[in-house]
Length: 383
Image 1: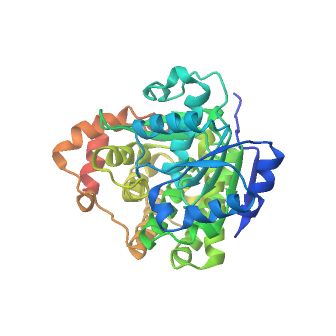
Image 2: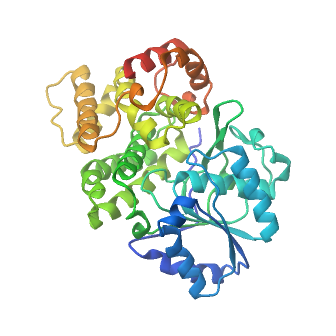
């Protein structure tokens, strides 16, 4: 069996690292960009930091910013139309996962127009051409969309998230400029940081995990656990560590998949428009507890290497419980929702949500065999 690793070509890290952007654009001989961002990032001045850099160097670009927090098929299709109108030969994505995912969808359709309906991109689509070049500048320390081969688009008509996996969508350049993340509201910083923790923990216990991805995921878990609270309070060093850790987690899970935390979270986002990071962090402790029975040794390793827990002379059940408690305590300190009832979910919707979660592409990676009934049980526990 061959284990595959797909990563982007070039990445830069550090406070103010967007300073390399102009040189990279000129070196690559790009002509005109479609700058993809969202209206919130424009109004709060974060996107403006990148625009100022472009303007100072007379780099040509046009802006597309009408993107929802859970981006839709229409967002992608409108972006394709804008990209064609601008005659852009590359995309600069400035934003969190929603923006970068939208940019990926636009870039793939631009070079593979037969997938213009967007729905046909779900799963592993048979695209033929590499996407339009993307330069990604993340503004949250969470999704790692700048280094992954995944993107998620909401099908509003069918209230489902389309999980798309395509090595041809990976950005050619990532600039993880932590200064662009400094303006995140506290809850956004907490929830996106926890999303990165979910990526690392699910990626570590997923069926496809192997030595190289284990290395990435364990280090990401350790860094996030020891820095997320300080990063939420705007400690610059901790923020830089979070920017690095979420990227490291992306290097791992992008190549081995995730599990039912994401399958379930996708349904909260699609049905109730719950932000992805909040949905993921909500389900994490419940699913970890349920999965722990099939991989307790991995919980021992996480406990010792990442959470500084003493795992000597404890049973498998106790080892799992100790890690789950560490997560629950962290989420309590960060003040994020921990029950579905807090985000507007309805119990009568659970059978439909469970069916959609069961057929979600992330479900196949879960370490424990899953049924719709088991997912309903987990929804009820987390309600």
